[in-house]
Image (tube, rainbow, N blue to C red):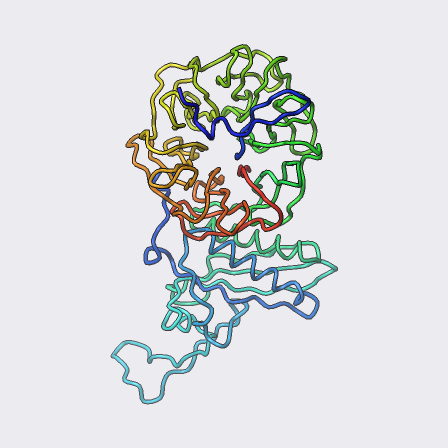
Length: 468
């Protein structure tokens, strides 16, 4: 049988030994509404006092980005806002009635425009907002203090309109201002039943010359820093469901092996790799975080079968039995009873599913093109994956599939290679690798393919995994 190209990946000669490694690494509606179905949110720039003002650019850009990226609001363009912006509910003033305006019996006379200091200035044209975010920042006792409010503009008075009012106290620096903005945005999203991605992290691989290391960054691409320092090939990161452990493949000790680290503090937890395995790769965690599932040539004489082991590498046992190359196993996070994986058993690599005992093997992708990188949605009903369907060999795009119906939806469309999708904890965002800007970089998008955001720009980056 002709072996699938991407499953074979790259053959490296290290120390005279040939080693095979991979070259690249709510329920499903996914509930992303169209603009006309979303509440219209006005978010004017917040102002700060003399000492806080230098941090307001970072605060305002972070606040807008978090709310816009939540995928639940229609963000009212700032060009439509009134010239005067209230900073707190007490700034609202009902304007006097229009002189000689017709008045209906039993009704108050219509007010004049408040110039921005009345709710109708924001709910009426041109902004036509449903909700208004406002606030201000000041420095008090050497700390950055943010006061924030959300007003429901459909209510009759400012007292009735306030749906959120909160104070955030942070360190007096740009990071503190950004943190205050993240927390304010998280509270606003929470009002509408949405989850904030603040506090979540994306782990990824950065190429540095001949080496590749695992890096980590915030959900918005900030605070990028290395996680491993092996000066070797460390690839294919996987994060445990609770975000406390990271597994990856590394050549740091010669042959490829699985490494398991705690995240905080960063510490090697020691995973025992079987001797004699020329290939050990693509680890991931079971939903309870107590076991590792991965691909290995251990004991089989060929690459690769799927194995399951404890977190320390003990109690190793094979699951798959095919003579084909089978990699990238991912356990259903909702049921823990089935595995999505990549196999070449039918020719070019495709996405398959099987029970935890290896029984009831079932192909999910339709056999056309090449499919890889399966990633379960938190609901356990949906897969994101990369696929060359309808494109030339190697031109992967990101798709999602309702596993019950096998219906695929294409999210990226031919702008370079788009691979390695990973779901965010909120189930509404996806991180992925794309070459659309030239080199491989990490991007994020909503699960309908909109709101693309480039997260990395330095070097070449791939294989993102999004953890808590």
